[in-house]
Amino acid sequence: MRAFVALDLDPGTRARFAESLADLRASPSSRSLRCVDPEQMHLTVKFLGDISQEQADAVARAMQTLATEAAPRIHGATFTGFPQPGRARVLAFELTDDGRSARLASLVEDALAPLGFPRETRPFRPHVTLARCRQPIDARTFSVAPIALDAAWAGLTLYQSHLTPPPPRYEPIHRLSLGPPRLTPAWD
Image 1 (cartoon, rainbow, N blue to C red):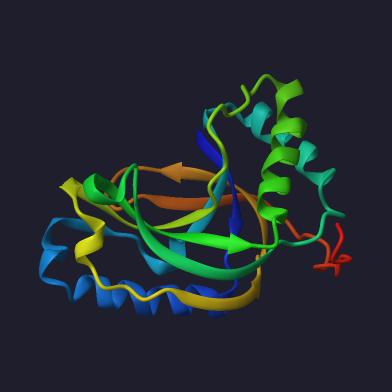
Image 2: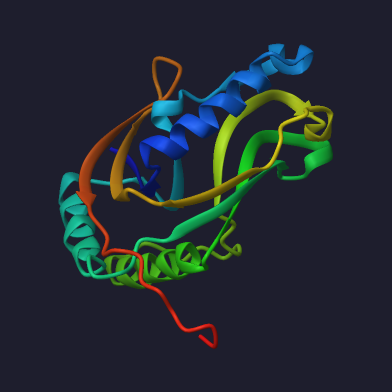
């Protein structure tokens, strides 16, 4: 199975992103876009690739060690394009948060490295994909307003990715609830 670990959006945040997606679809440049179903939106923490059922079970056990981690809080979302806004293949909301999503991504890397999953070499950039582009596009031509948020992730999930038939469909294999967001002193 093709699998990945992701943070799930709460329903309210998913609805806010769906509104922006509707604005994106209304743009004259939207014909070349393959928009993501809002129910499938997530933040990928770790892509695993093709794994066996035994590996999926081991990943699920490793994820259990993270159950006491506080759920990251999202503070805002800014529209952008990857790999570069001027020649984007992916349109996304880049997220600002309390830093816990990067911490959680690092902890997932630590938990899965002993299982043989190589560590990601690129810096973690928390984002939620809105659309993929058939041809590179200038993301700056879209007028998608930033979103102010105060939301927590719903949980951490191991997903199986079904790529055919299009659009892709993500099936939850294992879900993990995270601890409540904790207040931290300003000097942390």
